[in-house]
Structures are given as C-alpha cells and as structure tokens.
Length: 294
Image (cartoon, rainbow, N blue to C red; front, side):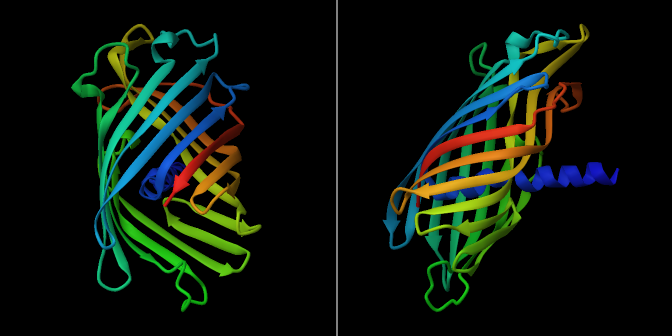
C-alpha cells in the first residue's frame, strides 16, 4: 500500500512538468522513442509547439500558441483481446492563451489557459474529444541578479490539465539554485534535476520526468468481448541523463537517454475505471529535439 501511494505521488508531482516548459518555450520540436523490447507495446511521439508573445506594455505580455503531438503505439501480435488497429494512432492539440506581467518587488505573475482535443480521430471531432488545461503561477527570478551570491528562481502556483486524468488542480512548486559556478539543482513540483554546467553553451543533467498521455477513444472499443473502453492512458516515469547545447542565447538542442522507473498502459471506461492493462517491460527511453527559449 505504501509503495502504491508513493508511486501515485511521483506521477502527480512529475505530471506537472509541461506547465513549466510551456511558460518558457517559444518554439519546440522533439521526438520520443520508447522501444518495445520485451513489452507488449512501444511508443513513438512527434511533438511541435510554439508560443508567440505580444507586448502590451513594459514587462507585460500576452501569449498565444499551439502544442501538437502525433502518437504511434506499436502493439505485440499477442495482444488479441481488443482491436489494436483502433488505438495505434492518437493526435493531441492544445491552443494556448497566456498572460504575464511584472508585479511589485521582484515577482512576476503568469497564467495560461488551453483548449484542444486528445483523440484517436477515427470519426469527426466531438465534445468527448475536448480537453482543457490551466496554470496560474508566481515567479521570483534571481538568476541574473548580480547582487545575489547564489542565483535562484522560485515558482509557485496551481496547475490543472484534463490530459492527466486527475479531476482537480494540483500545486506547482519549483525551486532552482546555482550553488557553484559549475553546479545547480532544481527541486519541488514538477520535477527534480541536478545540473553540471560544462561551459556557457552546454550542460549535463540528471533528470526525473513523466511522459505519457490520456486520450478519447471515439465510439468506444470492445475489450474482452463484453466491456467498452472509452479512454486510453499511458504514463511513464523516467530517470536518466539529459544533454543540452546552446547554439545561441535562446536556441537549444537537447537529448535524453533514460531508464524507465515505472510505466503503465491502460484502457479505461467512462468512469475512469481500468478495464485492461497491457504488459509493460520497456527499459529505455530516448528523446531528442530543439527548442527556442525565452
């Protein structure tokens, strides 16, 4: 029971990672590969995103953007209790609207609202495919303050996303500190990492992250000849190394080679009850991409 509770807590904590990324990324394209190996399912994801800032005043910006993913699942031929072709391809799209402004003192306010869809798209879009998300955060950034001997950044707030499959907002906390010219760390929610700054342009990180998705299955999927699945869910907790290289001040290449700590692939009914779990013995997680950062 203690292990199950801890595992759920890790999923909740790491599942907030996209909030931080979407607030700082102006544009991004990446590819994720989860080799099937001895598992019953493999995972490939191609993702592209952008946010366009519109200046409203000194330090005040409105942002509009889009985040799109194409997900391909590859099932083993031994899976025969449902039609695997119906759930091999999924598409996710979020349209993002954000606003940020500088507050009194050293704090900044940021908010984001997203509307989109997450579905296998074998039919026309419907209300069941729709997903919503929102974040509200307060940021105290001292990373470039010459008066601070050990630069830091603190972000606190709340985050909600239907894609996580959790029907309530979750806390968002992130504390970054550079405690040595070559070393820094990030603790809290959504993630933890330890960074070694190789040079001004490159750094190596140990990271812990969550990947995955929740999507609607249009028209339902017959499972075990007598049950109907309405949602597909995959969650992957990883831990490993990440390398980042800056071509310019804002343009960055990155790559992950990680080991999977835990993974789940489930089909759920309309009440979010699990009606089928696919065997998951994947070992490695590979990801690479390029992004334009604020």
